[in-house]
Image (cartoon, rainbow, N blue to C red; front, side, top):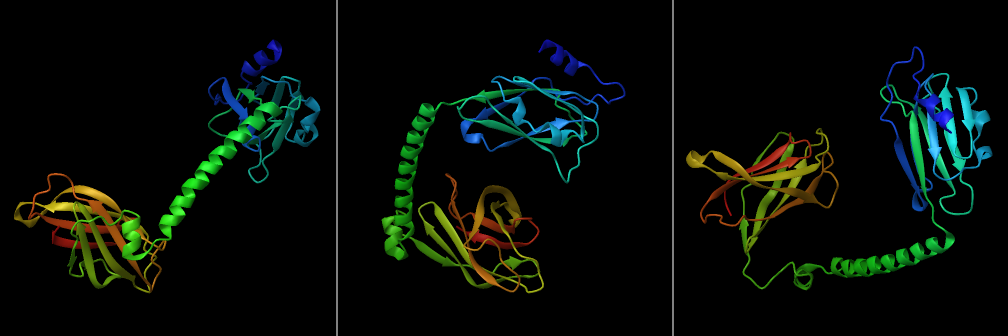
Length: 299
């Protein structure tokens, strides 16, 4: 064991010094048995993999690695690899080592890659083994968590089934306080966009919702919803600093060319907002280069 590790520590003649940090550690758990772990190797450099639990040497297919490796040695607690060439990206070798015994995880799998920047010279594989009894206990816990999650989903499904004003009351979205409705002008839009009809502002307590229908020109790219920014108008009518941001929400994932969708922006006015203040609301796409803008809003 000591002889093998000391060999791994020696730099190979003529090989650039691009080794990764020594003693990289991989923890293999029962619920991650199917995970592929990257193992970074390089021609002429020895990579030593040390296992905290013994593996079955014959479980490693050394013949499949022979065309690409000058050295492949597998022992119960150690695997030594030294590539002779750079590994092809189109067909990266896979190495599977099976642990001794029946505990989970039964095996660990590696994907071998040639990394021009880093090489794993020493890797410690720590098997977090679980017996059949321990797995049964974990399964019982998972079933309990699943039942609790399902109960939560049932509540959410019941809420989603409520529509209309009655549904808004039952879900708590509508509270017994006055709500005002105000219609806006169509706004300033970038080329290729059109606000269809009159946008609406719903106000209740500190909550604000702006709803509008946006149309995308047939010759324009899809419009992906981004963020909306609210700024208070400063002295002289110039927009001041942005006081809040809120996501633009649509039922569709994107506004396709030649189509229109309903969109909403919802936020709560900050505490201390001065009555009579004027605001600028700018609705942006995901890239921030196609916007709709309303100026001089009284919220």
